[in-house]
Length: 395
Length: 231
Picture: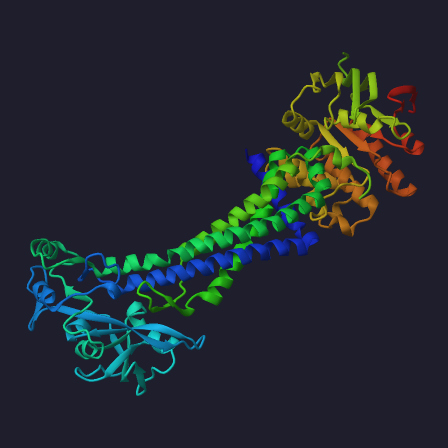
């Protein structure tokens, strides 16, 4: 066994030592592997960044209630009497001014994207002081909060970064109404930074919503305990609402972009097939180039297993080198890159590509698969190389 | 079989199939090689000398008959068993040296020892001894590309003898060398045979090279046509 390992190590080192003879073909294999891994990681980083943006917005201390059957706030309607009933329910935390409840409106307005100059949807959220207080990770980056009863609004950092015309002091027209930007807020990079916030009563008035809302947020008495609220909803026929924790709601919204990850894998798999064709060619060339060396070693008594493993190892080293190159390239180009896309409520969600160790691992696995598959058949040929080749005359 | 016979071929047959045609190479070939012998095998192209060398080296298998080596039959061994047998018993010297171009002389000579259980220190000592025997101690760290053809062939000889095999098989060992260098190599083989008791079988086209052997076997159309004892 020790001898076999020594043989495999020796053959592998010899193969790697002879790479200079096949420099360009070997580099082509490294680059092909790098491109495939970089593209996969770009897609996965996009999906991961979106998911993290959504997940980061949710708190298990907050419950969100929407009309039965509504998957998003946009297509939900909640009436004032329902807000009152929920406010009186057990399980809702209280502070000095009463139950911590925030009825909220969520309307869509237009903005011009800096990147493309095209119009895109931005959510304008109406909320009250309790709603602001519930978002404990919210901090003002610049300016001040809007004054209730006025056409003032604060903008998320993501909106400021991705859209034109939302700097502090600017006046923005939505429909017939003019709004003044008075502050910029951050919420730790989550989805709320993709929103505009203003006084709920003003939005109700400007958008003819009467006494209706689209969602209710309440702070829970006990972290994650929806039981009392669910009992209230079951008991009270007027409450045709569904309740879930805010964390659960945003986590499910985040899953919507999982198709990006799937798409990334499909694209990468197709590209990997192309890379494999090139890699196979490289490895078959390698075996042909080393034919006499392989046969000589076999004549000296080296096993066919060592010829097989040495060739596989060469392919793996080249593919993994490409994988590392691709991973670093993806990290350099994409990690932290800001972009926006259409979220579940038909509004733009601003998020950052996010690389993680888990994604690097997936890239490494893809590189290993490319290396193994591209090395297997040439390695088989190397293992079956007739020893007689060592005796052929001519170089 | 006499005790000092190292190799014995009995009724060995060998043929190749080319398309639908069966081309016979040997038909009932008999041959014995004694321990300590130095045999040159000569013959025209296509006479079967390289095929014979391949069968002696366990690189090729006969179509029929028996091949015995040191009291053990080898013609029926599996490929992996033959590989182990080669590692333990045979040293090869090729016409074009077949050194690993990415390894220096020392590492090239060490290759057969990687198949043994010798320690690294022991391997290093054996390599030094083999290189000293071929007069290349000062070239141990040189790469093949930095050495002349004669020096490369001497490294190949060191590689062939480093694991102390019972038999050294040489395939046109001087075919790529000038006369002077060829004579040096042949003298070295003669010394290994005479002073170190190595059994050597050498395939060659060159009558001058064959004169260094103890006897020469002439092959023609798969048969020995003449036997001549040189020394």
